[in-house]
Length: 220
Image (cartoon, rainbow, N blue to C red; front, side, top):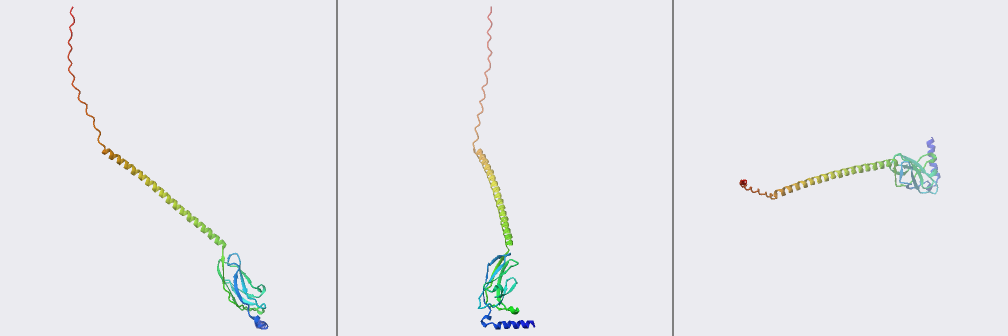
């Protein structure tokens, strides 16, 4: 019985209004105050609609892009003037496509005909600043670790090159020493032998000693 009476009241309400005023208001555009918000902020949506001669309710369903939907009546309460502003808080980061579509909202005397118009959807990007900060810290730490690893590799390469250079110089010194020794040996072999001194001539035999005559002593 109540449903029948409500339906009768709705029909009588639209019948009493002039035909031109019964037409639903037309939704023109959807606009986001900001297309990118943080996770702890509210998404603010402006619904721009065409005014009619008299305020007439029209029903509208807003789909926030995450499965949540909201039915509103344009022309009711604080939605009497364009733009009508709605706010919504998302529970998770991501990109969400927001749409709005006219819908008949049956609520007794507050029944609203479907709004006209087909506004273009809008996309809001919700970012988790804490997660982004953590990801940035992780990225910086990873870059530092990679840089430290690369520097360690470069140091090892430099040390290996230095050791190789020292071994090369040591080998060159040994080769130079061997070359000098070989040259000295060759020069020693090529040099003429020194002349040997002639042996001394044998000494002449000594003349025999002649005994001296003994002079006799004077006789007395």
